[in-house]
Length: 329
Image (cartoon, rainbow, N blue to C red; front, side, top):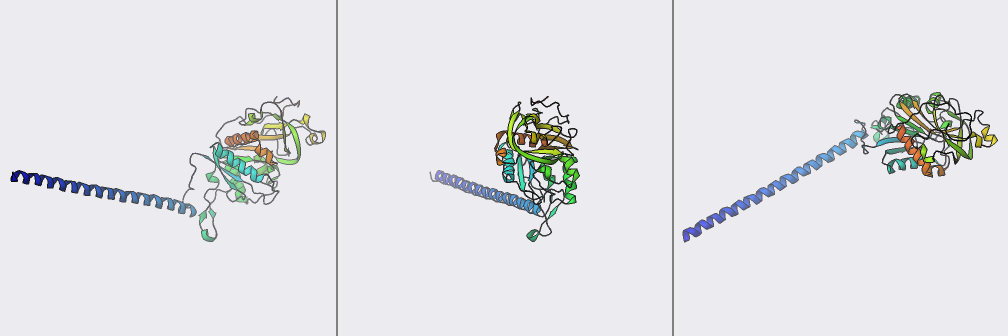
């Protein structure tokens, strides 16, 4: 009996010892896993910090926090011209519709610093460092609301032309662009024309190309639109641009009708410039235009086309004569 009890005690002792060892092993394994996890988190933190530091130092490409979405650089540099009251609202609207439709993200600037392919050197704390790595190389299209001669250097002008013509990127220009860079003929050729004059009116508009993305937002029939309408001059030519919408000259008052002898009053057009695409919208003087859902849809689709997301036939077409105000002919 005593021998049996002794054997039982031995078995119990062995089992308890085994359990103690197993618990110790599990604790050690947990500690090792926790240590490994801490090391991984530390490495991730170091990697993120190095990436951010590298961007500030100009080390490599710009970090993209919006992967999978197109990028739009919106620049309203009016330091040398007239600052329209609607500019801030225009920039905010273009930024919002891109995010609402998850189509593109917008970087808003009121200076022209990022219109370059070159590295940008910082000052002060960033003296001598390459900063603001998100230059033209980062963006799919540029939205401009310029005025006057602008602040672009000669190098920046060449890089802007190359951005569209050679890189195949998009350019979207809005109201008053027709009076910008009038001392730079290449810009006028790229956007399609300079503005000769303008007038405020609730004017009848003809949709010449309802197949262009977004043009159908206004319907297929002529419609009324209240804005400050541009009147374009050279280098504007029907042989160089694809007119999407124009004013109906037969519905204009005699004074405004006389502004163009041929009766051709384009307000929205598109064109190819080398490998790139240009979308030119003459409207946008009042805030109300930017609040119009039809206009917003047209802008969204025009930006998408300029970015290469959608396709359209933008071959130049002659002015349809005679004008009868009955839509596309």
